[in-house]
Length: 586
Image (cartoon, rainbow, N blue to C red):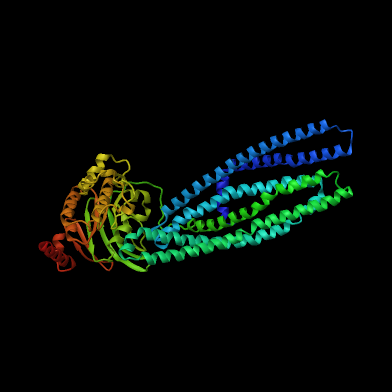
């Protein structure tokens, strides 16, 4: 139960509903006691009628009718109260489920880029869905039935003890066996439930990856192999689930057996006590049998409760592992200040912890507000890393980065990222309309503003050719569009944000040179007052920049303007001449 202690804050938050549920449960159990007592009184009255001729048949009929009406009335009241109990406690569990899912999602958003490199999407999804559902079953049904069981035991056993302490003691003899059995089986359920949930995460991860990469699977004709892999994982999941079910199945028969033994004890011991005169009438035996049967469902539900608690314990442990993960990137100040856009790298060295690759080595440069910097270099030279560090997706290990003269780690993280319009190398679009994908950069933007930035990104004519134009719903990750169209919609999304810093990570690689030229000409006007950093493999994207940096193996190889570098022997001149000759051939 140690892991489930994390949920205590929610019980405190919803203490009114929780305490009200307990109160209703107690009242419901008190009313349920009337039925055995009234039946016992009825049997006693019938017994006295046969033993005493003075009691008239009409009086007996009148008493029996009165008892029947009372039984119906108290049963109805107990039923209504039980309904209210469920409405109170189960609804409370739904509120806890809602809060816990939101807490996990909010924590996921805070976690750093490195976290998502270490963990798979399927596992993350499983913990916020399947694991939270298991926890909800503990907060709702498990707690409700546990309270119901404890209160019913307390009320019923107390009433039994008042009637006959000796018979009560004999009736409860099987309880130690019950307690030990629950402990042993619950321990095994916890182990098997953990294994099942871990396997379910693997299955979720596998299916998510297969659906995302279905085009590659089809292109390589790997459907048969992946079907076999899925079958293996599914069979393993089935085996673990069956193993868990076999343990769960032991509870029901065991509980019923122990209740049956208690009934036999009541009949035998109670009968002997009636013969010996230890109990006043045979109605007491009938009452005890009804009390035992009142305990049948609570006792039988102990197995189900224990199973839910153990499964929730295993699931909450998996949830806590993530909730206890601290983000590498933290907001170190609550002070808000406007970001103007002056950026400086001072002897920055950065190594990726997961691969131990040093992406940048002693890099220094500065970009003033309103200037454009172009970064060129071979694949793996560290170009994209520069943009990731400016966005504080990672923190540097050596050196420093300043924004407007302030160390980037002292700038409010929300202010920093709100001041950046970022176009990633791999354009990611959501399964929503094209309009909403563009408005992702500014949800308050008007339709006219959406069209304006689409024209600036030279994608308006493509969108206008679609049947539903800007209301066209995109497939997952924007699969409906071509690579170039996705990049241009992504550029429009960054432009509509109108942020003082614009980061373009090789975002024109999938467009033709003519379209690229049109977009770059538009950017010249748009970016006059913005600090712009363009990462590219093309000289055409860099030639109009105020500064150009050439990176190689994480180090600055060359830097200067286009005119300076094109007249200087080195990588930039070679790239320029190569791309110029390719353009002439085209």
